[in-house]
Amino acid sequence: MIKLSIVLLMLTSHSVYSQHKDLQQVEFLLGTWKMEGKESYESWEKKNDILTGVSYKIENRQKTVSEKIEVKMVGGQIIYAPTVFDQNDGKAIPFKLESLEQNLFSFENPEHDFPKKIQYQILSDNELYVSVLGEKDEGFSYKLIRQVN
Image 1 (tube, rainbow, N blue to C red):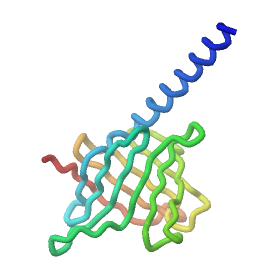
Image 2 (spheres, helix red, strand yellow):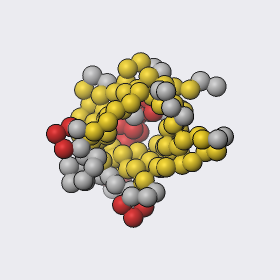
Image 3 (tube, one colour):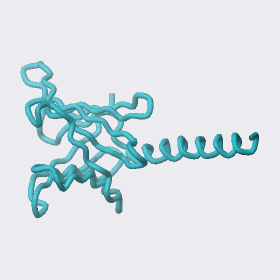
């Protein structure tokens, strides 16, 4: 019985460690990022084992939130789940981290109409390149610059 308890404890500890380690891969998002040339922002923080993000614009000194995002572990997979308030009946749409190559993180959901891919590419510690892509990888892209307080 004691051996079984020890094995279960080791497996549980490994599972918790693996999840934490996996989520660390996307912690580069933490902080506030400004879209190059616009007053549009993404702001990210970590709460428990979930990264939470918000996209917003500032116009006439007023903040307007357009999207909330969660990045979390679900069934051993990293899931990027944005909720755009005026789309999809206000429900989050899950995108699974499908590939990670040369600092390019590709979150994908081939069943969704648009986008099918949301990609973050790390250009430097303070610059990201974001691509929002649909069929045949058509869509739009923009650069984010880390805001330092």
